Image (cartoon, each protein chain N blue to C red):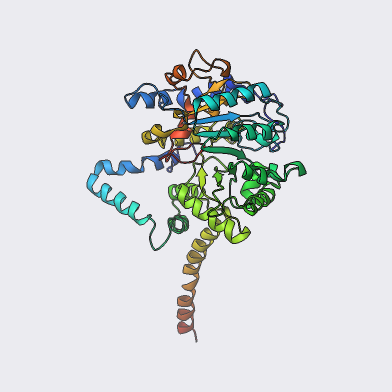
Length: 351
Length: 111
């Protein structure tokens, strides 16, 4: 694994158009394998429509202290895209007017945004029910200026959701970089120390598992039990829930699939595992994703493929919820990742 | 070999064995699914046993299926390899223990 983004390396897979082209060819080119649109049409409703808006997911920018091999964002230290304070203020207005239940901050590493603390403090005042920060954990130990973040999270009743691809060092470091596991464990212990993941504190600490290779995640509950036992026995770490997230064939994970000659088989396994029941609860149906520059997407994955919402309103500046609620959700073959088996979302399995 | 006897895509056609004998096929798969449910042994333990047995019966379909099943369950490579060694030890031991028979016949027939 290198330490540069595909974008910096000028890899063709950093282009959304190129990725969409890959996703429409391969096993789907011959017509033998049904496209995601074919599958939706079979259900009798030709389009996916949004339900009521519950989650606003804001991507503060693509800068990250890590360069993970599976990252669909192609995030890294060399990514400079970042939400301006003007756009952040518009997001605050939106939170206030739409009354969303959940605010979900992601990136990159959202904590690296220079206005992160200001934005969290302002959004906290608006009183959303569930205020999520997606933390990669290592950022909490990356520099002294971040050491007090667990206390800061606690003061703002943040719901911390953190990636920990596995409860053992080898698989974690292979996916996320050398030394990531040890730092992640330290960060989890720091979060536990202020009450995160501990009973009766109300401070939620959830972990995210995603497979370290070309296979689908196993049963969420069984993996949660294994994680809980291993992390508690070895490191005295507690957490609330484990979310299993399927790797979607986008950006670096797509590059890995192609380079390791797993692409066709992986796509076939996603298609074979298609579960129509998961369609009911896929996250694009109750979420809006906002890009650093204010453009609107059905989900973070569509954001990375630059599939803007299918609506005359595509930007925060012209936000009109009534109009947006009537849109068709944009799809491509990557959507199979969210409907395979028990389904997958930013909050884990959906069925 | 361009046209091997074993084709990996045939694993996905396993369910088709029911086509020519629906009742027996249905019974088999019901039984199969029941066997692998969580019980006195965990589903994880059963997956490792299945992986070991797959190596004993040298079934490439089964090895493919239970390596992938293990990956999905978070079983790591050290655990999988130890399971394969259990299979190898029993298989090797099964040959070796017959050495006792060889020794006894040898001794009985020798002056």
